[in-house]
Structure formats: C-alpha cells, structure tokens
Image (cartoon, rainbow, N blue to C red; front, side):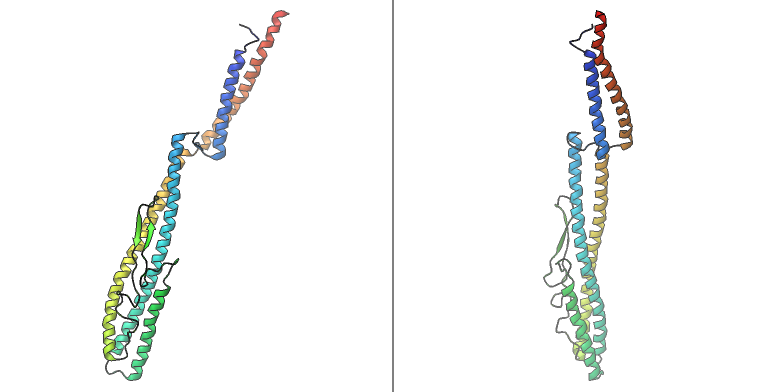
Length: 274
C-alpha cells in the first residue's frame, strides 16, 4: 500500500541506523578508554568485581609500603647488632690480655682504656640504631608490626631486642672495666655470655627480616595476579574493536543511504497523478 501518512520503510531504516549509531558509540568508547567495561552501566556485575579487585590492589600497595618500612627498621637493627658483635669480640681479646697477672701497669691501663672506649661505643650504636623513629634494640624499644593483607586483619610482628648495656642480653654493663686481672677475667666470662645471647637476638632479627622479605615478594606476585585478573575482566580487545569500528562505519553509511531512499518513497506517489 502506498501512503504519505506512514512511511514504514523510513521508520525501519531509522531504527536500524539508531542501533548502528549506538553500537558505534560503544565501540568508540572502548577504543578511547581501552576498557570493555568502563562503568557499571556497561556490565554491573563485572564492574563490581573489578572494583573490589582494584580496592585489594590498592590495599596491597599499602601492605608493601608497611613491609618495606618494617624491613628497613629491622635491617638497621641487624646492622647495629652485627657491629656490636664485632665490638664484643675485640673487647674479649683485650679482656683476656688484661687477665694476665704478669702484665705491667702501663699495659693494663692502655688495655683498659681501649676496652672502655669499645664498651662506650656499644651505647652509641644502640642509641643511633633508629629508622623512621623506631629503635628495635634500645632499652624499652618497641616491637614493629607490619600489615600482611589488604584488609589489615593480619600482621607480622618483629619483636624488639634490648642490646643496650642496661639490658639483659649483654651481661656487661656501662661500668665494666678490666683494670685488674680479676675484673678482666670476669669481663671475659661476661662477654662470652653476651656474645651467645647476642647471637640469639641476631638470629631472631634475621629470621624476622627474612619473613618480611618473603611476604613482600608474595604480596608483589599477588598484586600482579590481581592486576592481570582485572585486565581480563574489563580490558577491551582493541584489534577486535578496530575491526568492528570499520564494519559499523560502513553499516552506518549504508543506513544513512537506506533512510534517504525510504524518505524518497512518498514522493513517488505523485507519479500516479500525472
């Protein structure tokens, strides 16, 4: 039926053209953003999952920073402990030398002065073994706790080790001297005990530092896996979208022509009246 009131062909052509334009807009958005799911409107379920995973990735970034801080603090304590261990070995050597009862006064005095200088250096090391305001080896030092998961519900704690001359790990004190054979012998015995205790403290700190390093590596791999998972969910296949873009552009041009042809149909009715 030929009519000028209703152009069914033009209506169908317009619907098809609108559909093509909508698809073309979607493809262009994917190419511009690189995302197949850029908002909840694209796919609510996938977008929600991706957002949760993005939150976890950000959380793991904070975990990594926390682990880095804890490891650096622990490593400073380890370096200080190792320096103290070296000092104790030197002090033992001097204490044993001073324990010789046949030693003359001048030599004993010289050994004692060296011993006291090494002893005082331990206090200086302990006092300065601080990182970001935290000292793990001073008297009354605080434990350090690092985040272990993205929600903050799990932590890794490194226990403080008191390596000061007023603590219990080192059995020598700030007043220990080797000015007599007897005090030198007692100091040598105390230093042996101190070295044994210190080795245990260093072992614990070393184990803690290693645990932090292992967990940091794991967190890095987990974060990378989540990033990849997010990409699998929301990233657009640009090669595929490029092919679709070309196809839709051709389809759009054909749709415009089809609509033009359909709009010309009513004018053909004039031919019936000639």
